[in-house]
Length: 290
Image (tube, rainbow, N blue to C red; front, top):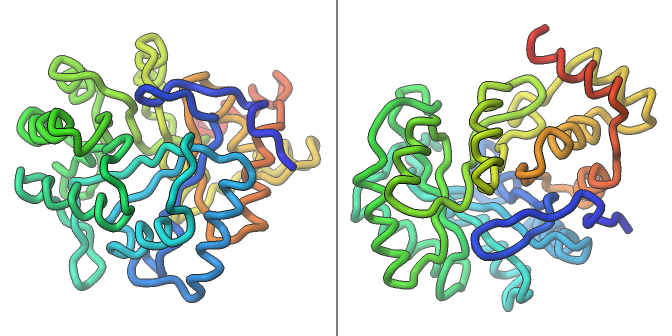
């Protein structure tokens, strides 16, 4: 069995978690909408992740919607004492599978209540405020003060334990840190998308976890001759190399690669044991500028 501890641990809220976790998004149907073809297989993936030593699962009630959180509860509740579950709020799904902003106070509270009910939890370990200010759903300018104040209130009420940000600009991270303690930042980042390099370093200095979403490219998987060549030399898969590069990029990076396959899950987790030599890292660093 893969030894996830080889990748080390990092602080997430008030807990130390292994740096290799699991993202549950792919357990929903196509387009992260509707139920999976095989709910039993989805639950098997979740159980396999816990058996392998995963202690950090990333999810959201807008995956499905509601589908993934219910699968998590069915498969894992009552939860292991050391399991940290992180969810996201700030969006809702339309009937056409669209992703729509939902950052009003009432919408955020309803989202937390939905997550609690579907996950069968009394409090959520970490709730990320998923910012949706831009038309293309990427990071965009806008004050976090109003929606974040709603999360702070719910934390004070005991509904959530820690607060994070997702899809945030450096300016929004600084604004948020001026209001409250931030447990983590979850943004798009991988070998080919390096826009958050400076933010990652800033967060590392502050002891704040950075959680890249789409660490393997997401809906458009990473493809690179350089990546394939390095993987071939190291007798690993390209995706394992891409994950190992992230682990070596900075100690505050926590990974949440997702899959709906037990075999693929084990392949991803095995990247925790892969150490990239310096020459390979140099080659891989050049992918973003290619």
